[in-house]
Image 1: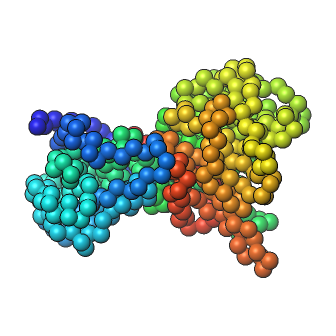
Image 2: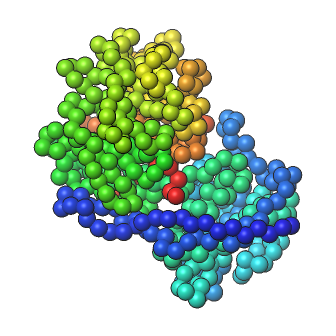
Image 3: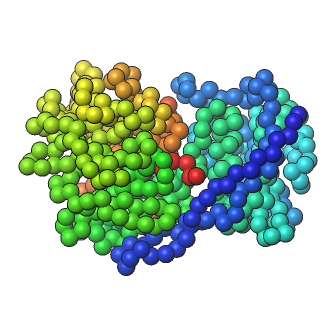
Length: 473
């Protein structure tokens, strides 16, 4: 086998600062040095095929995978090794595609990354893949985290890499390793090295405090971005950078902001009285699309972020709202009630060829809203209210309206957002308020496209309107 050596840099900027007395900025762990990809080993496709998961079909039986405790030679590295292996196991288990085996049942302990697995011992546990790793302290004080992914059935290594970074960045390294394991076995991009921005809600219903909050996709590293002095709504991530747009009521006037997560820089895009939803970015991040209400009529507009010029895309005496670009930027999906009830439409990016694509099924017709185009371009996610049973649903359909599938339902489920690999959705769900005034909680959930793997994402307070980031560069 040939050994290849590669080097890359993963920039970041976790720093604590204050943009103004009104906004608390995100503390984001900065990778102050390069993450070194030191030893990358790939095996041939014949061996890899033995542990390949096809996640494009229906329900997938989780693959048994052994994730050993990463070895270390000091109390510090031993503790870090346990934490890293725990995060990798949690990421993979939450995907619904992997079943991490109980470490107490392991027949082999690794004292070094160079110790070869006894494959018969791992086959006895029914493990199909094995993650082995080690942590050490480098002379410059950085931590070196190395791992290997093994095909237990074929007895060969699939991939092996090592990363050098500051010790406090161990959690992000764990997410990166989990992404590579996911990609190596499924053939699809991972989504663990990402973040979620959402609306954190607190206080009584008649005086609700809504703040921007951000966290890793697993709920760790939670931070608030705003202090709650002004109401904030509908954050949306750029598909190309760590930037968001959101709407905030400043002196009772809706104002759209552009916020850079890494630097904390914030700027006003404009005051848009009557705007119903915050804008979404175009695929290249150079434009945003939004809904503006003027003279009692709501239409879709596009703004060029470089020139701040706006152009009108729809002109109809109805409510047109919730626009979302296709990943190639050629088309837009939006919601409109022009047909008598709110439905999902698609149109060309210049506003031409506006076509309705949602109709429901006989006996379960209802309203459709919040359409969001998948990063893969193959599906549009939506919220649906079914009049027949009074339930809300999160579903997906093809861009031509065919192949509709409902993935989740509840008293109130809404606002789907896509993971960057287009295989998982996140949304928020509200429980009904009981007679004694309790209940009514809003929580975040994720679900994959099979509809079988629903997971709650724990947050300190009530949470709504999540937006999933692209992979952190």
